[in-house]
Image (tube, rainbow, N blue to C red):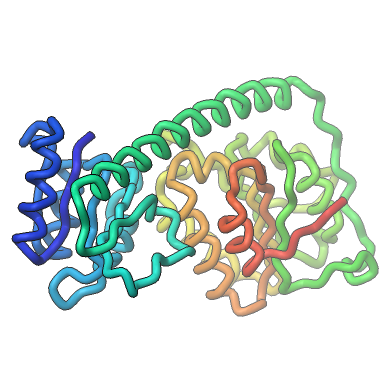
Length: 310
């Protein structure tokens, strides 16, 4: 594994480096930095498997390294071993912290922490590969099924226990129920925007009446579609749609595709920022494969979305 040591104490850097070199790590696979800025820059080019990170680097919170890397790098995994004092608590809400060592530490503490994190990384990679395989099979079967036409309702959503300004999520392995859910919104009253990985024409044909706006996302810049990797551009597009309509309903049937392209944390932040900016003047709806979520991820989503069960 490639290890990056982030600590403003050069003596600590050298001790950890010596432990790793004595264990057989190659010198070119162990790098040291003394500041948050250096760490963020080095992570970009070195791409370490594990970051050994002091809780305080100079006068900055060491975890600033994580938050800044999440802003700058979508495709670099962040596996952190926190270097802390015995009195400090390990943040429980940070999924990037995979282990910790307390100061003063012994060589066995460092090596055991690395061994545990290596096992976590391998396990996560296996789980992600299995999820992708299942999802690929599921999507193949799903697309072969004949999709029923959705009948758009004329009944007020309040009579169905729904309220405009509340955002909803639907748990399902593939987007199907979400279309039935959107059928509950009268297109003569609500302005509906579908964000999908399907072609715009195919999405519109799912509904029996009404004007449905569609933005189609693609892994490559195709004519008539937006880049699925461009969450910033997509947010601008959605925000403009919300501002231009009186009762906007924005629907995402492609949560899994967004996560695969942009990373789960970035997608969670994306939804939170959009919903916060709308100030209850719109409804967002998302179809989510909950097998992708940890309990922590699920709780984060529930701060913005109400779970709708059929």
